[in-house]
Image 1: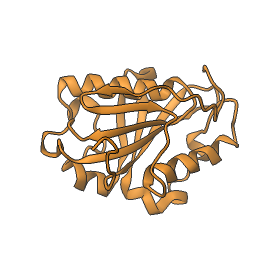
Image 2: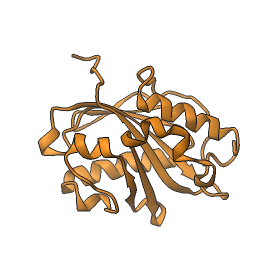
Image 3: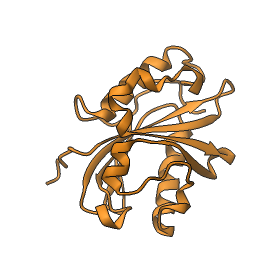
Image 4: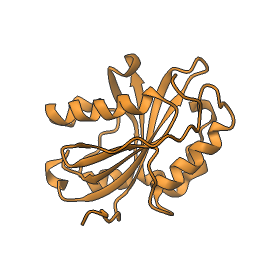
Length: 176
């Protein structure tokens, strides 16, 4: 791993199909994304060398935002990702329940490539990734604004095992 848990070097945003991606960005105050990142940093204190682990992460600790959370299992070192948990608010917002599905089962080929690029960025280091913009990855929600935090979880050897994300759908894009 390139960084220890909590290193906060902000990387300039990258735009993918109208969606901005930023490592260690600033999250909307009080939203689900900020709550997840705050909890994730608390988990960092348990294993600062390897990063937070699934065994140390309790979804019930952040139950107030559980309906806005997605938990993805990392498959084959990041070759693909499977949704272990897909919150009810995510289903309502994106008009799809992708629980148990791998990414290519519910996104177009182009959006699958972009999603895999973002998720591989997330598991590359021990730090949160901020994604915001319009939900263009689903045709039926392409104009829906959102902000999300993506954080990695690791095993005892420092290999990424899960990615957890939390979404704010009441987000106002500062560029508008």
